[in-house]
Length: 476
Image 1: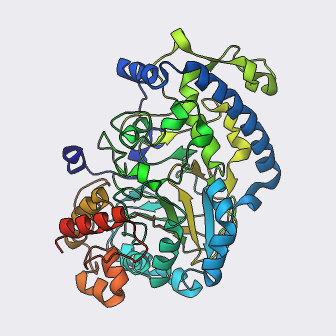
Image 2: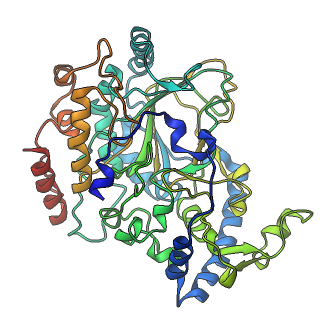
Image 3: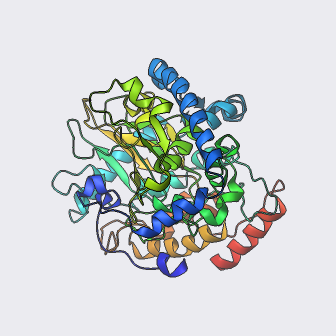
């Protein structure tokens, strides 16, 4: 695991993370994936079949709700009332796997981030982006607004509070939910009319690794799903994720750090169809579906068949002796992609809902297993701009990543998960450690790996072990 993650990656951009954006081929998966699939369900095929029937029934009901309610199902919290709103909406956040927290950074301050970034790009015309001739997503990780936002006391408070929507079933699990670690990701400034950054439904954090025993299987993350008991799968059990490996193939942009939530901080006024995020807000159900889909196939294809008849449970059977190596939408070294043809019961045309309207300073988060996408076309009148900022707990693996990321910050090169090259190392006005120290309080410096981590009173025995190990790795 360590040798794969320590390899320096070639230069590239966000398109390299996804087969659909890069235009690459998707050859059939090798025989070992068929062997893997058979081993995951061997001896309890009947339970898996019964669970699939229950899943399709539940999906049909919940999809009909999403088709009617759309964005209204997304939990919306106010930063000014964060503690009360998290408690009040905890069950909805857990069901939906997504939330928007309003007013985390003051509106004017967050909007000014965008103009500061544009000036940084103007000063440094060598900045890489996608697409290079009409940039929408910039290969920037260390601009001053990104540093200030990641270290912002309000954002750190929101991240800390949201981490505690998770829990660990094992108090000895070496993970701390009291301290967030900053993860350096890209940014988006998407212009009206853009149709190039048309990233369809996908899930980050690897693809085939979700089935692999030396991937997520190392933590038994999805064991209940493969055992035929998807209802017992807890997506919010942090302890199961400690040992999971999400990047077995050194993919460009494949995440090796455990991000509990992915997220972005808005720098613009944006609503649906204006180049923004769509999510599938059925966390447990959709996860179980894309994991079990490779074990089933239709008796009759969709051609000339009414949709309801094609999706009917009786038209879908366990593959058995006809099973192939296919893991629908999963390609080693790339993100997990989904579409209506491969994953018909998700009814993605209506179950992918837009985030509600956001202002600069609003913070949007989604669980690391959540299916998400971006508008195919930006139909708005002004930019749709965000800083990608996830939420990452303290684990040994995350601390090891932080050491390498800290060096990348000092060198001005991309974060270790991302396409390599000189990055911002020669950029004019790139922030230094002195800049970070001037704009971050003690909590911010801890998040960046520049100050010793301190265990909270509420930390479990396992969390304290994680903190001690992390400090050792970080050199404190």
